[in-house]
Amino acid sequence: MSRISARLASSGAAVVLALTAASGAAVADTPATTPAAGQAVITTDVSFLSNAARNGIVVIPLQPANPAFDPNAGLTVTLPVSGGAANIPAFYGDVQFGGGLLFLNLATGRSVTFKQLDFSVANGYFTAVPTGSTTPVPLLDPAGDNVINRTGLTQNLNSSSFQVDAEGASYLDAKLGTTFFTAGQQIGKLALSYTPAH
Figure 1 (tube, rainbow, N blue to C red):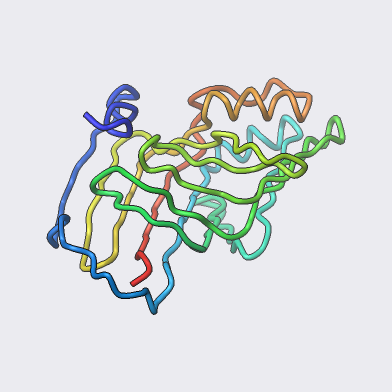
Figure 2: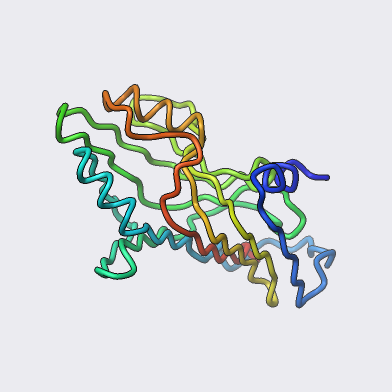
């Protein structure tokens, strides 16, 4: 069992592989002419946003991340793919994203900014690098029911639950001077679409 399979299984996730193209297709030795493309769409639950606001916590997406808000669906943040080399159905590689996330605690006036967002497919979590550091922090975990499929060159991961990682919760609480964040805290859901460079 791969590391991401084990991680998802240990969190009670159901991993579904629906391959619509051969996953073991050979990669040509020619240089890529089309860069990696795609996006990660994070839909944040209204309940999470309400609880965060009551605790003075605000999360602001940074360009080129694209936010949108719906009073029923919640906050949707679209992070564009900026690079990476991954095979999500085979559970290896990384996908990088443009943009960043700014976390503010209005009660304490403390903040932390994350850039260099990366989905480590093998480890099954999203990491990000805080400003002033070079060390990635495991921040968010796909969980719940996870559907992984491939259509042509495009690989997809849809997770019914997107949760705060234990290390991310500890880091955020320490940096922001709060006890709001907890391991496994449900923030919403994830839809990831990734087309490798070709």
